[in-house]
Amino acid sequence: MKSVLWQGGWATRLRIGSGLILFAFAFFHFINIGLGLFHTDYLHDMQDGRHAVTRHDIGSAVLYVALFTHFGLALYSISQRRTLRMPFNTALQVVLGLLIPLQLIAHIVHTRYAHEIYNVNDEMGYIIALMWPSSAIYMQSLLLLVVWVHSCIGLHMWLRLTRWWSNVAPYLIGLAVFVPSFALAGLLTEGRRIWTDFADPSLREQYIEHYNWPSPEEFQALFSVKDNAMMAFWIALAASIAVFLGRKLWRRRHSVRVKYVEGPEVVAEKGMTLLEISQANGIPHTALCGGKGRCTTCRVIVEDGAEKLPAPSDVEARSLAAVSAPDGARLACQIRPTEPITAFRMFRPDGGRQRAHASQGQERKLAVLFLDMRGFTSRTTGQLPYDIVFLLNRFFDAIVPAITADGGVVDKYMGDGLLAVFETPDAESSAKAGLKAAADVSHALMRFNQQLEAEGSPRIRIGMGLHLGDLVLGEIGAAGNAARTIIGDAVNVASRLEAETKALKVELLVSDDLLKIAGYQGDLNGMKSFQLRGVTRPIPALPVQSAADLLESASS
Image (cartoon, rainbow, N blue to C red; front, side, top):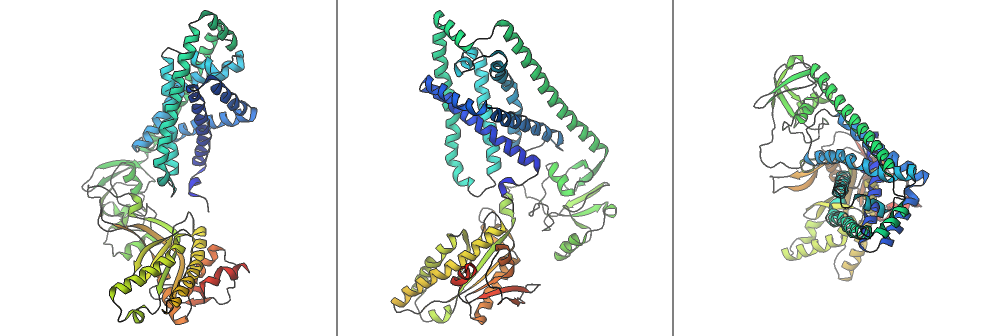
């Protein structure tokens, strides 16, 4: 299964890949400028090292292909948009991205192009002297900030999908502030030094000769190249906008009118679902599953035009029947209006602070472990409450680290038992983590039981049910006082499997669904089929006498 970092279409993957190349170039370029804060030699030495990579034929090809790919994809995304409405951070990144060429073109023409065509020695000193102290230095400083902010926004929008990003982001903010500050400090320091040297006529002549300073005619040619490149940029941008406007005009001619009860009336493109129409027009519309048809929270009552809609599919009909939806109810994520309709949203945000989509519900395929202590009631009968709490805490202290060490999270404690989920990047790694955790819990329990026996206390036995299936992770409770938990058939299956371990006198029942995804290579001859209460289909599962032996038998 693909990592979450590279999910998306080809355009998304190309944009991320080219963006990372350009980000790396910008990072080292800015650090290079910042070295002017210490000594000119450091600045030039690092520039020589960078040029050994970026001005090599392969390095140059990679860099410029990434540059044109990234810019071309930005224009393509603009041309393909349905609307210019977008979140603030996205709009800011787009605007900053379009501002970059306005100064980057001049920078490239007067450095790399001048070096290749007129053999100009485009060291940092030449670049700074070329701009100092005119308004160009302010524009290039602004370019530095624009590039960096644009890059950081892009990096954040990409990595925010990972589990670890929120933990390291506060520390990386310091680095994000340091890099442009360091570069601007180096630019200011080196600029003052260069300008002081240029004030000396003899040193000025030496600099001009050292840099092979372009002649007035060569400067005029460079300005002409810059103007032509700028013209090409404006033409490309205008073409993208023209395509966007053309597509918008075409959609309007092939559009449908949707009226929301107690809401606005909008015109949208035919072929979009009603939920997509709501989202494209900024109309609040609840959809906890994200419009995948896995819930009914987006349902509407079609008050006018229902007869012109296609009949519900089997999936939509089953979902509506499951909630006893009234006549005229449809799922907004499933219907695609082609004629005018009037719709009433059954569940609408109340206008207060909204929960994030992840808190409302996120669907994942993950491993679930249900664990329970055997004979707890008889063991604790007649004991003092404090002693019972003490025993439970010792028990959980012994086994829970084995779960968390393998990537598990205890979702809830239920008296003498617990429910844990293994929220890893994909189903395969979750299944493997669940198997390892079950074995590690068994080992931990053995050590704890040895300690209990040394104290003269009876051993503890447990039962575990381990299953992998579809879950919804979200917050349950009133807004602001909601606890994160998991819901789904997989939880019920794991619980029922755990209950079956008591009659079988085994420590673990692990479902065949999980074993297959985990690629388990052990003996499966003992596999049995279980008809579990509340589960519509038989569940094949493997009884394991001691979970500690589970992985050992698979590797032998």
